[in-house]
Length: 168
Image 1: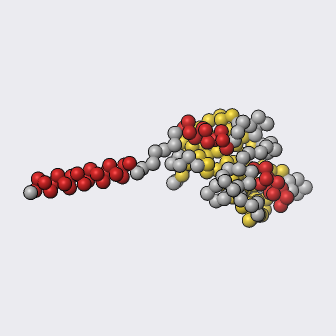
Image 2: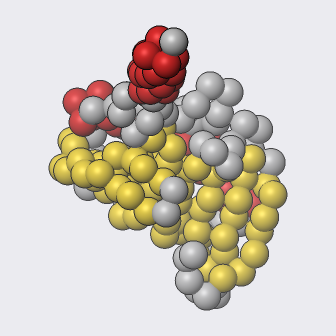
Image 3: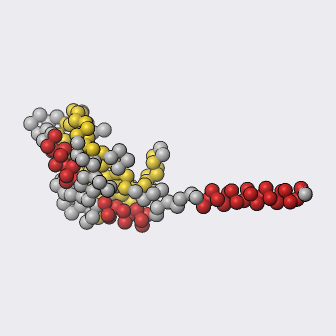
């Protein structure tokens, strides 16, 4: 009787371990991440791709160069393969990109709305899909003041327009 009981308990533990292992999702590999980056920034040249582990963020981080000299950073969630963020740190910023998620504005549409809210020169921009938000830093040429403009990524409504000393 004891032997049978030990066998049943052992089989149950083995099944539980096997079950939990099979439900753990596989991480998106670098090749799949590169494909997602190319989809997000068509025509760009991927300069580098590396793993990014900060706090609870586990992403693929890619540096992309456009034909006009602009440079973008793109982050892809490693667990899901979903585009998490695109950031433009170096211009010129006169390009367009596809919408980063279903129902989102394209970069050019968001840029137009941001510059309508505060005319000036873009110094930095980013879109974060988890926050459903575009963020632009625009410098007013006449006063050299810097403004942070946050837009709802789905409809372009300005949610924040504040003066800043430097980009966050």
